[in-house]
Picture 1 (cartoon, helix red, strand yellow):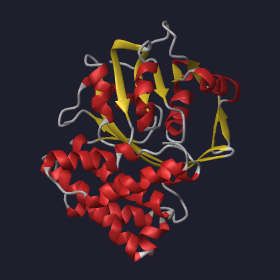
Picture 2: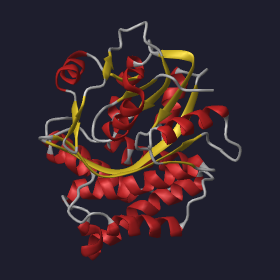
Picture 3: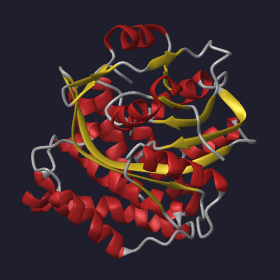
Length: 306
């Protein structure tokens, strides 16, 4: 199996990192799926990352001729439903789909709409921010991806890995992607939400003892929910997430804090919203996440983006 045409839906702070690599490798065999004003802006202005402007092919959702062998989702969770609709004309029966969205629910939502396609689990570990001059990326990080169990890699996983390797996109196929996704989820639930509530950059997680304690408590709730669902996460994973927070670029800000400061909608529904719902289903108390959900929904309403 060989991927000859690839597309990405979501060309923001994360999508542009990897879209740039695919564009350089594939040229017009790589496309950004976008419609309306976003499509017009990308065609006219392209996207700038670290001072480099790229002008990828833009395919609108109404297209019914350009088809992709591989599509990667890099939108926000609250944009997922519309993004799924946007790719319907670009998907073939054998199109491989990969989500690198935050959270733990995106892959199943995509699979429900495209039950006959291979839909892979994925996550991105990187550091980028939107600025007035475009995207500023200080660390391209790595994409971890695969089927739920990759003890033996499927032909679809091998095809995506071959594409990423050719494009020089750092990648890793994890043996247990469910665990990998939940560990990343635990980190996001803690760091993103607490930074968005407090306004603290990364340095606060190591420099402010109270914030460090809160981080551990919020993440432990995710750990207990995961354990109740039979997912192998333990206290050492919490320790590692805290270490990552404390070793991150001190003045950098989480994506949720950036969204709050810019008055944009946040991913709170896919973070504490999911934790509290899964806690209810499994009988695990989640008071820290219940509180964060209420506080973040309040901040959204104060920003006028509820």
